[in-house]
Image 1 (tube, one colour):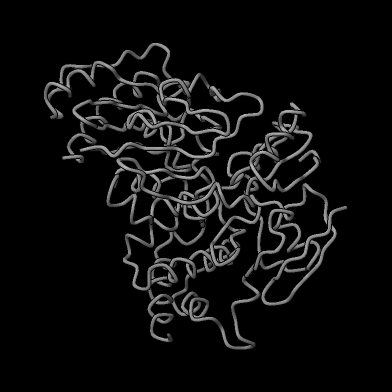
Image 2 (cartoon, each protein chain N blue to C red; image 1 turned 30 degrees about the vertical axis):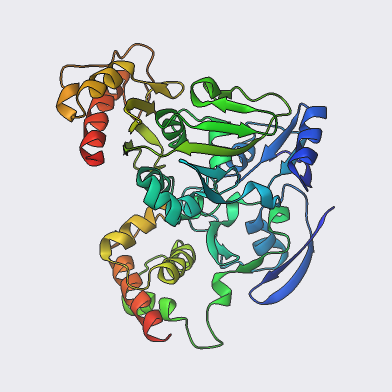
Length: 157
Length: 264
């Protein structure tokens, strides 16, 4: 079996996988990082979004072997110890989640947006969320949370 | 997913050798179509040859009066490229609306056109801008490249290396997206280059096509009103749960008029 070495949340990991193993399976089943969720399995819902070399990607649509040598950031890598990442804090403050299933993907996607666009408008946030599906909230509080989170990230720079 | 062999190609020649020798091997570019296809067990390749590590396939440059985009250039990089935005803003805009952000961070122009999905966005731009598809073997004119549903002129050991887009005077793309997938239910790309008008239509038929009556009308008068009395026949167009062929035929005209208005 091929062995894949990559950096996940700042730590190097070497994992034996099959060629067909998806990155999300490597994260969840081999490394026990179950914060990254599998929602639709058809590459549409965005619950599995993580960052690979700084860009948001669907980890259910990337082979683990394709991620060899990359730097992966998952929801578990955002907080600094007990201190939530500003985007996570904004989701909590703005009631940006209900059941929470889509939340890891939403937060990772939102952090990528805030890196590219420090002050996104409501419209830009809604367009950005095309690839993240939430079946509880109706999105309003997610959009509010992302706006607040992006401003908090910009303020802390 | 069925299992397969996996190999990271070191060069285009290396990848061509493998797919030339093994007809069941497949190239993977961004994988945004191929991996979902494999997950549904709709394909069973013997091997995946990953083009992701080949630096020569990436990048955007201006060459004379054309913008040349490497096959492995991601949609996000076309959308954000200062060269593309200033020379062919319609192409940057098209790239910025493919799929969703996570898809644009992986998907590539070469993968999109080599797959020739009937609802993909790029083929309409390749056809309307009269682009040239550059492969490891030859240069293929846009009109000769897209053959049929998921079929192109590419040979068994032929690999797209770049696409060269002549810079138009005016161009715009309008699509009516599927609200879930953001694939084009109908997408119309209009372009005026060196006095010639071309109209590429994607999403509507089994394969991208030119709407030649509209080209003739817009060639005489570059104005959406020139298309008012034209219509496209629904025969042979796609019909599915998202839109009937009649509806798609109607949308081609609507999207073309909007695109002309947007191009200015």
